[in-house]
Image (cartoon, rainbow, N blue to C red):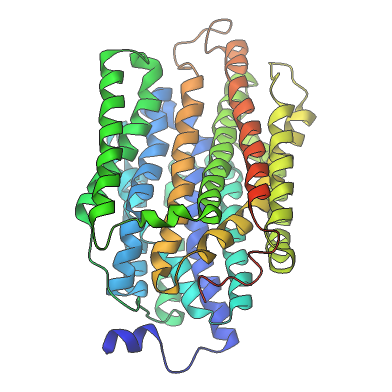
Length: 479
């Protein structure tokens, strides 16, 4: 009885209170999104400061994204069971303490470990924030607008990370990109305590520890193979063993989930075409974004000799495109459904990647900035329709899990994008100007990455074609 009274309060909060809750959750999600990309622009500085090469730098980014991706679903289930505000505050605290550990890290190993702990904290924020927002918005149309705003803020935060990181590194050094989290976490903790009401799922779910362990293993193995493959050889015994283990972990995960009464991930959801395409589309969007950010960082700083501040400033067109188009996309989804925003997202992302498929040392800067603008526009248009479509396909009692699956697909895409982009770049530490990994060679090495960005854009066009033109206007799955 107590759980039900908490999950369904007798009177809904006022309009002002509901949108205040959204603003508080959006602030916390902005922190998580910024931290996903803010480190990218500082990777060369981190490499010099801690004497670590490209492969180690990939782990600095992917330790965060892989851990977060693997724990998002269980964090959503924990929030539905023990209270969303309680888990949200716990996530903020863990995230803040891990950020301080990152700022003080004396070695690459400590930094990677602290980033992994940051991922644990972040996993308690992303799905729970969306669940809190969904719970606070009883009206389906208002909820659709709120989800659009939430997705827009998260998308903006991902695009704003490199700009913020460049400015901080120029002024205070690379450790400042972690120090900056502390005051934001303190503010967020106070606001959550004051404004966000407690809520739970209608029915507490059992924890699926075997499924969680297998999911974590499968994701870590897949990303590890992508990062280490170029160095150990794609056909080496170690790589072949990795393929076998990743396949076995994935197969065991599917078998375990199919046999459990309350699985970590309801695989039956993947029989719904709109849900599947939305999840795959979200993955593709974040692959494209993270490939762009990592290749941009190493190309501009190593090939063109730009400073971190200038490199971060080069992504301003991307941030501008996301800032303008993300709220516009949310409005379009509310009025017309997801298809048109997804067509715009796919077309501009593909065009942005194609602009850079012949990148070299002397590529005109205006063409580079145009490509970043187009990719930012695509990113801005993509998030609201994909998030709304995915969440709308799930039952209301699974709000935490709904946000978790959507967020998991994003972070899996981010981890894959970083791993693929890193595999294209030869270690810059020991590279001469004319050899592999030198300025000219590095520019050439990035070209397959830009083709991948274009392919992700084309895939969004496929997603748009399979999505109903007005299906997300009045989401029924989360009413």
